Structures are given as C-alpha cells and as structure tokens.
Length: 130
Image (cartoon, rainbow, N blue to C red; front, side, top):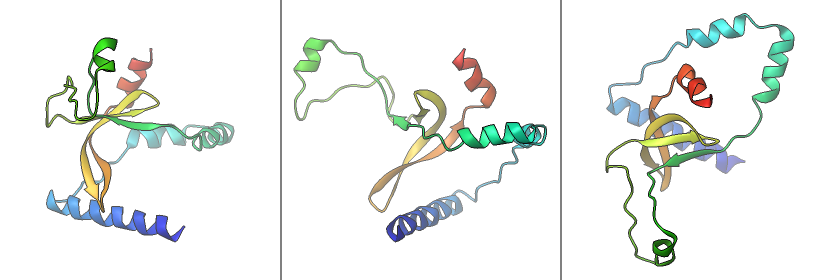
C-alpha cells in the first residue's frame, strides 16, 4: 500500500512540475455538472453513487492499420506496421471503446502515462452513443 502512495506522490509531483513549465494549469469550473447534481433527488443521488464505483477499461490508442491475414502471418520480430496516424498527432483516450479525450504520452519514473490535451464534451459523447 505504501508503494502505491509513493507512486501517486511521484506522479503528482511530476504533473505539478509539468504544469509549472507550461505557465501553470487553470482550474476548470464545471457548472454544467454542478447544476445537474443540485437538481437530483436523494434517491437519484444514491443510484448515481452506486454506478460511480463500477470499473471501466481505459486505453490509449496510438493508431490503427488494416492488413490482410497473409501479411499478419508474415509479421515477426523487427517487422514494422505503418499506422494511419501521423507522428506527433495526439493519442485517442478510450473508455470501454468510446473516445473521451485526446492526449500526449508522458514518462514518470520509467512508467508511461498520458496528459489529456482535449476532452470530448458530454454532448458529443452522447451523440456518438446513438
């Protein structure tokens, strides 16, 4: 448990340092979420609290490629697969396969992470579900 806390402290310190390099991060006031929460009943809040603990899978997508099975079977160590994405383009951040943000790779203490650069609005995410 202490090791997890140390890792989180290192991440927090690294992110604070990175924010300082950019001139500081701005706090975002999420009025749309505050308004929704204040208008819900106690029963609705209880139901919301129930789903907030459901685990989801978050993944980062570097890019995609379509190849034939013949070419797939010919891949071996050292093979290079060209992706559709251009170098330097932000990565896609997916939650359960749904795009929620774009970001860039960061490295802290030999571990990869991602710094979100653009978060998809709730309205756009809902539109993509339909």
